[in-house]
Image (cartoon, rainbow, N blue to C red; front, side, top):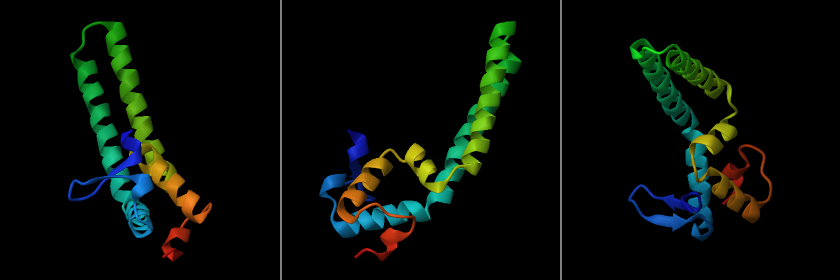
Length: 122
């Protein structure tokens, strides 16, 4: 499963369960520090989807097809609002396929954390 494998910057694939403590900790903290960049990329993706649906609605001739494209456009814009308001860890769970595996492994090693607790691990 790709969710259970982390790909390093150099392209090496490492099963999450085989990551060293320091690598796991650094990866989790890196993702937490990067959450706003991840959020902005997700928002941009959904804004592009909404724009495409709007363009499609203008192009389509059938009323049902236009309505469907407009509903999809509205849903995509609603998703951008949801992403702006979403809790950081939930956003990471939705946007980073490995997040849940990383967190499960961290919890199995260090117990159930509160936000920021991993910064204290060595």
